[in-house]
Length: 114
Length: 113
Image (cartoon, rainbow over all chains, first blue to last red; front, side, top):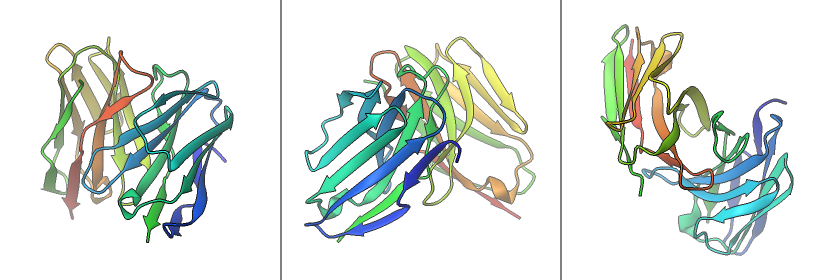
């Protein structure tokens, strides 16, 4: 595996379910991110982790709970979501939060909340 | 607050024509600017990264320029092919936030055979 891998690729969940999105990077980066992409809107930053420590929570509702157990793995735990949370969730990584070497994105998880 | 605008929102050209995609940003205090490609329902593929001190970057048929003082970047794709059909996004890394990339809304490109 190379680059940034996200699983699952697609997820359908009810509003009362609990599920988790997983992201793994094989690039030796030390910063990881969650982005949300809704239809017809620019990508929105959700969370930033640097050296496994959360350094930014961009006003995200508490029904989204991130976890970064080590520098290679990032999770997004979901519970009691709303239909408007349906979107493409993208994980990214970089070497340092300044992103001087650029950012690498995964293929995303397409989430549908029913 | 940094704002990134991409014009046009959509573009359709016949195969073989050159593509010109524009990106403008309001705050010139940036680390770098990155161009991405996104196929429908897929993730982002990095195309070119331009540091704030650079004027342009080239990779194959792609060339991106950066004029930081005027807040503009242009992505040129030479001799377009149907496989170039995708949405192209520019993203700016500003100096005032933790790893936050500010994205434009993208330009949707269709190259017809």
